[in-house]
Length: 365
Image (cartoon, rainbow, N blue to C red):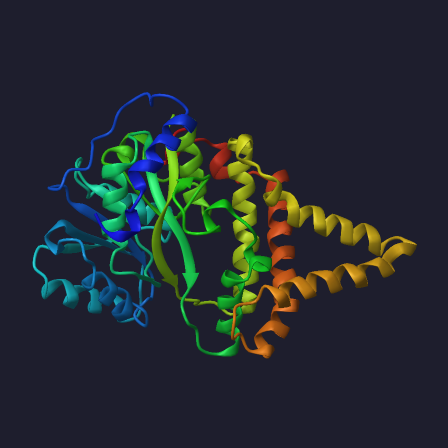
């Protein structure tokens, strides 16, 4: 058991005291012989795959236990060729599959269908770098935590980016005034949380729950974690470290978070118990701004923005260039507006795919 899990067994007592009771079905304990199936959808990630796969080569977990299931979502670059060459040098260590539909949850389900009943399943991102003990920490967590913890994971730290626009994306993930105080982003302790980045699941969990809901074009991870909780399981944050490589510029990031807000609203409509104050903070702030603009008290927006700007400056990452911080003062609010707008539109509009009910391998609540 490595250093990251010193004191983990002591933590189990607190987990038991907070648990929701016995789950409706027990899942396999994680034994030392179990395979770790790593699901990695990818689309035109040729620029990032060499670095990502190098971090898989550096894992401290026995390489014989690690099986990569990479799912091509329609790449047109050299990423697939690089992956296939990498696997040829490591016989029996993985496969590359094709997703007939360009969709992350669809691609993930293609991978889930290629897992074994005894596999620990770990979701990987094709532009995230993993610390050497990433997989070992996940296996240790499942071996040590109580059985009703069906999913574990951590939070991403932004990998070092180059270029002004990519550095803005790095700031968004490193400054608390960017993406906000989600419970899984706070410190590196071990505790129950509402969701995690990427995620890993005990053997049998994904298969029994039906995999990812393919009707969700985004936010499929949070929909799944809420489904886990609704079925009696729990999610735990564990001390895994990974660095997310910023791949989008400011405009694409704003559009991404608007889309995320829309699909977050669909998750909330299915699981209203998932709503937290932080989820509605951006729409509430947007409503206040619009109301003040329509009144004689609009001048109050200046000191309110000044307070926001001062907090953003005070909480920026040490050594962040002044030009990045200055850009953040405009970029962060626009991301919040995008998310709020998507959430509001999603609250009043339900996609036809969801209204029609489960499709294909879409999961059922």
